[in-house]
Length: 394
Image (tube, rainbow, N blue to C red; front, side):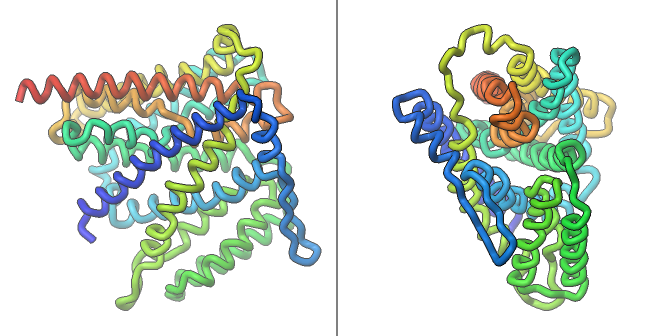
């Protein structure tokens, strides 16, 4: 499949997913702040049990969504990253420099802003990674509203930046949001990983064996204390992209099969389950608390400064060039759009501030929604103005 058609299909899918995410989040907010709020809570607390012999996994529906279905989301991210590393926009160093620098700035500066506002509260500091994320579906969805006024190179820049950002989020989750590790479960996970690598090296191209061992890997990781979604990324990196003969690529087959399910079902369901903030008792002071303020400021201000600043520095020092056909105003608009954290920010927030355990659970979601909405509106306006000026100049 030609690169342009592959990208077009990906972009259109993510744009449509962004609209569904907005609808799901809005529906959750409406229901949880209506007389039906008890039904929303009951849905999230519904006990779901899976048992095979002595092995039992019993969790409420919310955790099955966050630990189970989101593992498929991370599996898809891992597949996309591996494909990009081997055959795509991450395969050549020259293509990675600009979005890589922008992604680093977009992760470091928001975290520093959050830290600066919450450094005196150790419990609140657990949320430092929440504003580091960029929601690729939302950001591309907003950019899609501008159509052909935005050059393809700028869309590729945003997509590559967001993929690198996702890699950073995966590393952060693995290093900083794992606790109470189980040696036996980690040993089981290691055995699964060895089996997956061996199958890859032996040229196994059937997806069935990978998925069966991947399921066992997910259970082991779930029981180990490392977050279960990382099993998805690990499995993805073991599935072969290239084959020795003329067989269809297992990686591309699984990626294309997963994409619509993740875009149209899993992510909207995750948004519905995690965005339903209760506005009971919410006042202006609720938004000015250091936790939501740190998240909102990190997403809106930190992402803009970090992404645009490192992009400007990389271009001015000559190590990268401005995306073809784009102007600085459009780059600024995209930098602001990177502040749409939503899906990944909500996910990291659920790890940092566990609902029912942390006093800041819920406050983080107010900051995420505020920062993401402002970034979407302002980013769209700035990009639209810059694109209009460019069209007039042309």
